[in-house]
Length: 393
Ligand code: FEO
Image 1: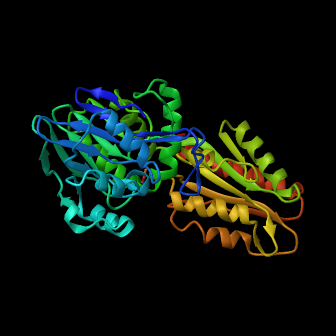
Image 2 (image 1 turned 90 degrees about the horizontal axis):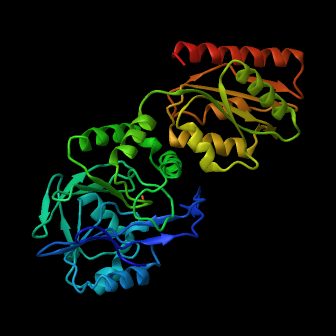
Image 3 (image 1 turned 45 degrees about the vertical axis):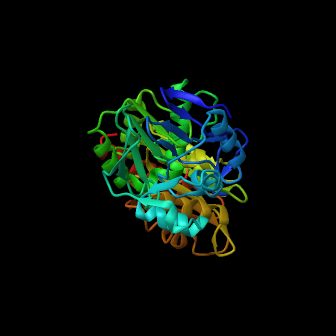
């Protein structure tokens, strides 16, 4: 890849992964991603911020050669996950005088994942600074966005905040800076929902802290760089804040059409009441689209057929994921159908223990819905409507 100048003596030297379609063997990345590595040439020392994903070391070494780099003094690791550190051992080997600059938690992870020897580390504390001569790196420990080791690096003279995963997006582009705000907004929201949403409390705290420093550019380690930092800061405030929208998300699976008939009826009734409904057939739904919809929705209704004596595995899986990402959703209900019995509702209720939600009485029926069942769904829709109204939606 070609080194790209962000400002004088500051370069992007990362890798654009146009082909990547899955992250963590779980999360779809329909727009690929980038692993952003940054090179900062001070008047006395040179620093590399992050490396790139495992297996991409030849690209990074070639890019550094094109930037005419013969010596690296510091390799800053803002976070230990291997998409930013997988090539560290090779870079340490290529630049034997270089030291990894990081915090104690990240050091521990790097030693554990990559077997980096003790003498290759410089361990910093919150607010510590390292001088590159005419440029200064200041470190801000920022745990739990999204691992316990995460931190930011602030390049003081140029007012650039390097945030690693935080504020990033899985969006492959040859452009250095955000060009199409709408596209990047959606990719950043998808990324937030998949990676950051469980850590809303930490996010709010870190947003407050960075609001106190002067920032000209935010340079994350995935996706394009923000030359309007407030575009992404404001988006994060909205997503991580407490307010929800007048929306109901319905992930569902239906084996023989009964549960489908219920969720379709429920969505029509809700829609007539002015509530936006997002329906996800779990046979075909994109997990990222489902997670994105959870960022704002006031209510989630799980539609689940019973298979044997419990929830269909797709409903179980979706409920497990919803619980894991801890959306700010206020209300949950369950609808669906069984043949001869089972404990689907109780099993699904037991899967949402992370959520601070009020459970609205489920509608769980035998076989295909009949008149009384549709009436029960009318009542569920009315309950949802009234609860949304109480929230001022
Ligand atoms: Fe992009 Fe948590 O690694």
